[in-house]
Amino acid sequence: MLLTGLAGCETIPEASSAPRSSRPAAPAFQGSYHYVQRGETLWRIARSYGLEVNALARANRLRDASALRVGQKLFIPVPAESQAFFWPARGRVGRSGSSGVSISAPPGSLVRASRSGRVAVATHRLSGWGKAVVLDHLDGYLTVYAGLDQLLAAPGANLRQGVPLGSLGNRALHFEIRYGTTSRDTLALLPGE
Image 1: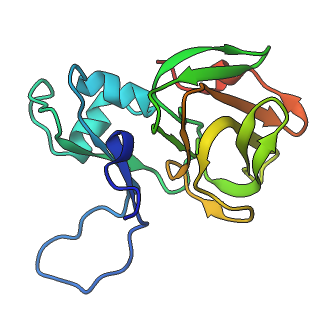
Image 2: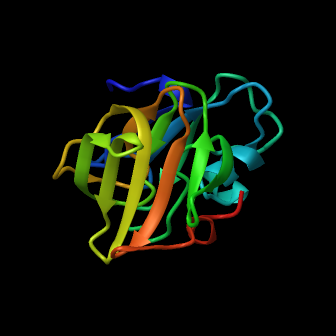
């Protein structure tokens, strides 16, 4: 796992078939891991990933949501065929243009695929935005991730929701959801904070 431990999360591969054992099999989820930071609550972590707090608690077999420890590793489940968009990064959110959002996060923070899709563009120079990735979700929707410091995805790659596609440097992420060539109200299509 090349990206293990960067900015509080790591990805895990899709579940594969394994030999049968006498113990019940774990649910076939894919997702990522989040490392609890000082001051974080289960509720805030769940909301930042677009999850219900009860779902996150169940996925991690937590009985007491208030008993989180700094550095604790939490599994962030991602349904294999989720059609909902989720936040690509955690940080301070503002408007970016008329329909996109800017997300300010510490340098090195990972930017994740908001939904599963194919990398249509991964470029080192998007006019005015620097490094950028555009995902085609193959249903008319595109997502734009601009202002990246590092690209972690190549054109043509198929990415699952939640898989890192880049990381941030000293500038904010510009994130935009488009339908065809038309920008949509990105905030309206993302889960509430």
